[in-house]
Image 1 (cartoon, rainbow, N blue to C red):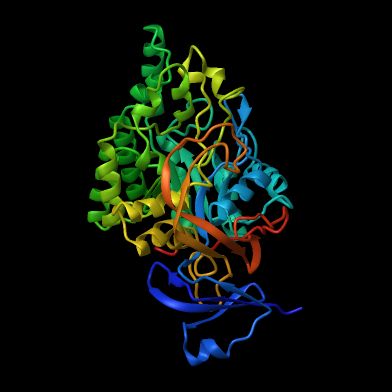
Image 2: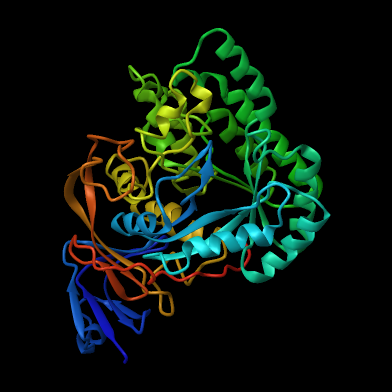
Length: 466
């Protein structure tokens, strides 16, 4: 059965254009766009017509950094692939790229198959995977080549978390050399974990146990140092590098310096670093635990450098690093010892709205909003133009966005499976109204009509900026 949907009267906003156009969708793909009121648009017929007058028509968001069901610190991220992708849809995100985890002593294949099983048949929107490398050896280096052929084209390494995910410089260099040969992209958690562990131990010995000390021991200079080191290792290997969740002004400076040399170095930041700060970590009682993530929240003055990096393209992507843990029963594992608080924040539902607020506030333009949230993540991770834009042949992942609606972010109304919001009480302008995933309605005028199992696994090509 062929089906046609027509979206009429909206302002279509992509990374490249803003145009008043009607959008014709046929069998799950964008078939055509034509100027509103033109003869071509007037001739179109469809089974269903959506009136987008006064609204934006934008590509579905691509969140290239999520952690559904991630095991961490003796517990698991509280969103499953089902709850997490449903929340993503509510927030206008129609593709996530999650992280499959290799455990030390096990193969990449085992880790990847475990994540396939978690996600298969459970996702409301489309998904893809990166691979976390916890154990770099001859066997896993060979497996990297096979994964690239399978459409898992990016590999995450950690300079942080000794004893869990940590890789030393030699292992990092070997993995980078392999990715230089097979076309994969190395993603780096850049923090000097060995040095941080010393500072954690010293802080706890002094009786400094509150959540705010999490931010104080994970120093901005240790993020900058690790970012610098990762860049130099990538240069030695002749490999591209993508630095995840950049939070500090000094780390942005390292990326900018590398890019000024013409190096294939890329960086992402996240809404928490743009909108929250160490003021949140210092909230009284144990409230600050809600904001414990790594890299940590920074003093407010770092925000200006992050916004500037997004405007100058020294930072190219805003993802969420969505990794939620409930305040009651999970975050409170770290009462009396900040180092035992599970690291991670909920955010997959809030990203598109918060970045629209950044448009309202004058930090970025509308097209830049779509660029950093949809188009660039899709290009960076080999999903474009299937994802990240609205063009003939693209998947019909479409969001009808009301730029004038006002909302207050709250755990009372969000759809993420977590008992608090990192942005509780924040008033913002702009709201998702209707969401289509491959032409199928997932959110219909603020009602969820999606289903677990609609979301499909998407194999990815290699980074399209290389």
